[in-house]
Each structure stands twice: as C-alpha cells, then as structure tokens.
Amino acid sequence: MFKRLLGVTSIFVTGMLGILFAQVTFTEQTVSNSYVEPRVASIADYNGDGLPDFSALSTRETVEDNAGWWGNDGTPKDGTWTYTKIASSGFSSGRFLVSRDIDKDGDYDLLGGKIESSSTTNIAWWENSDGNGGFSGFRNDIRTPGLSGGVDAADLDGDGDIDLIGGFYTETAGDTGIVWYENDGSQNFTIHLIANIQYITHVGSWDIDGDGDNDIVASAGIISGTGGAVYLWRNDGGSPLTWTQITIDNALDGAIWIFAKDVDQDKDMDILAAASRANAIVWYENTGSGWNKTVVDGSFSGARAVHARDIDGDGDIDIAGAAETGNEIAWYENDGSQNFTKHSLSTAYTNARYVEANDVDGDGDPDILAVALGDPNASPAVDGFIRWWENDAEDLKTIADGDQAPVSFWNNTVTIDFSAGTAGDVSVYLDSEAPPRSDRLASGIDHLAPNKFYTLWTNKTGYTASVTFKYSVWGGVTNPATLVIAWWNPGTAQWEIAGTGQSVNTADQTITVSGVSQFGQFVLASTNADNPLPILLSSFTATVDNQGVLLKWVTASEFN
Image 1 (spheres, rainbow, N blue to C red):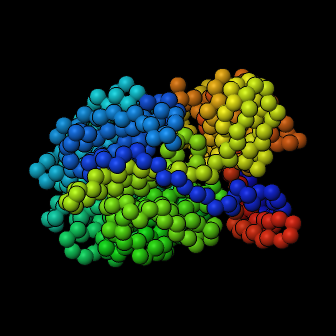
Image 2: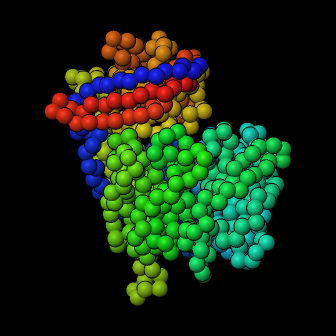
Image 3: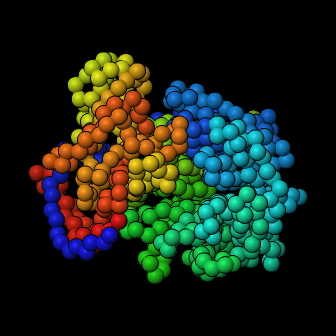
C-alpha cells in the first residue's frame, strides 16, 4: 500500500522537554578489573531469559580459557554476573567477535576471528547448542587465507541460511582479503573470494544500498606504515554472487573499525569509521549517489572502535568511541542536525579496544560497554578491564505494593495500573530503533511497527497490571481495529500478543493491555497488512516560543 501526500502540519508540543532533551548521565559499573588482555565483546541474550548478557575474547589463552560469557542475573548494577568459560582450545590471539544465530535455531551463537600467524583456521564458530549458553559446539575448522581482519554473518545469497563473511589482514599482495563462506543449510561452508585487498582491519555486513540484500563494508589500514581506506562491496545478486567494489575513502590513515547506521535518519545507511593514526572518528553520509565525509572528532588519540545508536533517548543517532592511546571511552551527542558534542566517560581506560552502545542491564536504555587491554608490560602489570556505563535515560518511578492508582510514564505515552504485587521500582524506555528479531512472529501477528519499541522493567514481584500505550507514538495508523500490542516472550523466543486481553480506544488513540504479569519489550503490531504506516518527511523544523515547541513538517510519502 502506498499513499502519496503533500501537506504541511504544525503542532505544539508542551511538557515533553523533560525527557526528550534532558542531559543523560552515566554511572560506571565494573564487571572485571582482572580479565587478561580482553580485546572485544558482544552483547546478546545467550540463555533465552529475556535479559542481555555479553561475551568477550582475550588475546591469549589464559585461565579464562580465552573466551567466556557473563550471564545477567537480573541485578547487574550490583556487580553480580555469572561467568561461564567457553571451550576454545587452540583459539588464541582473538580479535573479533559477533553474536549471530548462525544455525537459525532461535538462539545466539558466537563467531570469532583471531590473528595467529601459524594457523590456517583463523575463524571459529561456537554453537549455542542448548539455547542456554552451553556453547558446546566449538568449530575451528573453517579454512582461512590469512590473519583475521574481521568476521560477520548474514544471508548473503538469499537462500534462507546464514553465510559467513571474513576479512583478512595480509602482508603480501595477491593474498585474499575479503571472502564469503556459503552455507549449504547444514553449516558446511564453501569459501568464495570477493576481492584481493591487503591489510583488512575490520569487516561488517549491512544492506547499504537499500535493495534488500546484505552488502559488505571493510576498513583497511597498514599497521606498520601509513595509509588506510574504507571500502564497500555492493551485493549485485546472481548465481554465483557478483560484487561491485566501491572505494568510499582511500585516505583514512590507520582505518581500523567500521560500523553502519542511518546517522542522519534519511532512510539510507551511512558508515562510521575509527582511524588509529588519524586519531579520528569519521562519518560518511550516504547521499544516494556518493559519500560526504565528516570528521566527528579529529583528536581522539588512537581511535580504535566506533558504535552508534540513540543513546540519550531524544530520537536522533549518537556515537560511541574507544581510543587506545588516549585510554578514553566517549560518546558524541547528536543535536538532531548531526552536530556532535563530545562527552568523555573515562580517560583512564588503559589501551581501550572496544565499545558498544546497547542495553546491558535490561531496562531498555542503551548503556555503554567497553573493554580495555590493560598493559601487561607495565611494572606492575595493568590487567584488562571490562566495564559498562549505566545510562539513566529511562523514566524510573517507585510504586508501593498492592492495588495502586495508575501511574504514567514517558510523557504520558504509557500508563501502568498495578492491581497486585510487592513494592518496587518500575521504569519505561522508548527505543527509537527497530524491534529486535521482528521476523519471529506468533500466530495472529502480521507484522510489527519498524520504528520504535518500549522496554518495561521492574523489580516488583507477584505483580499483575494493565498497561495502556498511546499508539499515536508509532504514527501512520490506518486501521485501529486491527492494532495489537506485541510482547517479546523470551521463553518461546517470539513476539506474541501481549496480556490476556486488549482494547482499542480510538478517541484517545490508545491500546490497553490487561493481565500483564511479565514486563519486557513491547511494540505496536497489526493482525493484518493495514498497519502501521511509517512516514517519510521531506522537511522538518522546530522553533521554541513561550507556549512550547512548534514542530512543522512536510510529508513526502507514506508507505508500508
């Protein structure tokens, strides 16, 4: 369904500035100050309990056995995590790690890359064989043509199974640099060369050109000299797959990490890069016909990693970075027009190597997780760090026990009416991201709203509540009668119709879900193809006067 519109709309927004534009603060939390030489981490729910866990790789085999994951016990703010070693004998010098459901059995597996010069198997896959973080299926038999320069996994050829992507740091011209591993559906992988490129330092896969298939982005940087580049390989489809190589930047000295995100929210994927010798975090704006380069920070000493998402909950995309020689973790606040203000979280994070902006404690807002190598050659030696910075952007309130009056959250867009339960804290956070795993839908749900979702969190026990959501938050509703609120059920690993009953009030533009006894992630959904209807804006302005904020926009199109 496609509707062509052209019009100008103005509304006044009052009472919204408190959450939307308040400066967020962070509280540093320590997971470990003694993990030996951690290099990289990854956040995912490995045991299916609905709470975010995380994994990490060390640079060498140690008492931690080089790989492990930390289970979230529901109270990570008190420093309590359950650590589990992951069998990884023979996998030393780990550098890269991603969480992907490689065998498509509904749980997150791990894919890692290492830089062991004597090895011809520098990629390993840990299968989450029991869905509970068992990771008993360790495979390090995947042939590789060099030192790992990054790993990722995605369905590249559109046949429904998950393929692997590998980048390789090769010193000799002519050695392979970018390859993909075709999955036959039973996790037997056939290697295919994409490009002979030296000095690959990181690789990732996203749909950059918006044609529905995954492309490949990579950084390349000469470790022992000068130079660096950012490349895109456009997936042109076909059988066999064909690729078009595009050089985005051939003058980014020491390019070492890449990430893709629609930074300016113009409906196409942009690219971010960290460059160690250029001491830079760089944003490449995708114009549709080329790339505009913007240096976000040109004095981020030894920039090592970059990540992006809406960190402060104001609806635009912020950036997080790690700087190795500067020993720094920082985030860059977007003012909505892609002007970035730097906020340093730590300048004592010795040899910072990785950063990720994601929900660590399960309250919905993006925290910041980082690992630092430490300095094993110092006297005394400095062990590695694994720490995270707790984001306070969620709307948090304390509610007494028993039957209580309704309480509103997040600018009155969510109202919770508890009829039972112990006293405790309750928080609500609206995430301006696509809901995770939106392809896993229970019977009765046709599709989910693609633009945002709520996380409801509480430490109350024995509770029952009715929850009312303003469905106008998602926008573009064409048929309210077919709307429902979906809840992510961690037990079945799918989105299900929430609660024991739902009712729609078109006058208030709300949906009330009754019989809610378990919080988590909630999103607007539709029982047929009518809803929701995302909106593309051709222009948008905001002005402040004594009545509030005046928003004006022109809608160019609406589609679903």
